[in-house]
Image 1 (spheres, rainbow, N blue to C red):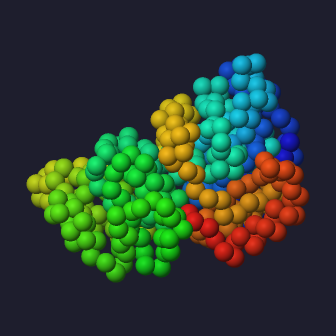
Image 2 (spheres, rainbow, N blue to C red):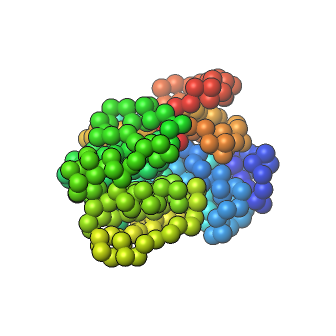
Image 3 (cartoon, helix red, strand yellow):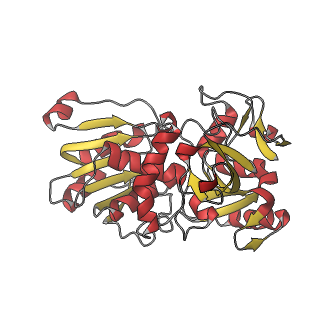
Length: 353
């Protein structure tokens, strides 16, 4: 089979598709034929050597959708979706290949109406958003959540979850980010700009002086203080990125007098069983169409994986998908056609990062 195989860490221009032999199927595993696999920033980070837990050689890829082609009779043919946490593409060969092995306990049937491409792009964004908002921040219907980095994949997923769970969402991002596409149809209470607006003042006005119950920090140091100041008494902040800065000043008097709670989230530390349990929780919201996957901005055949990785590493907006064999669910499409359309998509990037 063909796979995006990494023998040593290095620049993305060194990425190549390799011809590898299908591994024997261990007991308790299934073999999945990959129909679509998202490319996430974390995948580029693995290739570059930013994750110390990664063992080499390794087939890359955390998120996927496909169907079971080998394993117990009861699951053969099942259309599946999933994400790898800190396992797939790191310590177990991942989804940027034609086939992939997966423990039986991590096999999750995907919602019947989702295409493989739609299912493949939900993984990292909604695993992180659900973990932050529900598992850690214990968000409840009727509460207010301030979501930073709302133009990105995790941020827009978090906004969608806030609305799906009956809450009030305040989207925050830089003034240079067009939040129209990622937040389309989500009916957020406000869109604020972290570089030009007085975010805490605006949130206090929106909440009649109470402040928000939850703040999600997907940016890092630059927004830490303004998010903390936007929280009311007993407010909870979850930090899941420090991409824009790592060090902050924290007023401990403010922290304990307002009974604030601070959580850190690293989904790369989740194992496949933990990921599967998260899918069991948010999956029904997709099945009932309360949640919808982020749109796909660009599609690449597996053979053009390096181009897909470079697009993601460059920070271009939109979810990027690899299609082994360049076959789409609705019918066959040549690798050249997929790559050509992806380059056209790149000129008009899609909704989420």
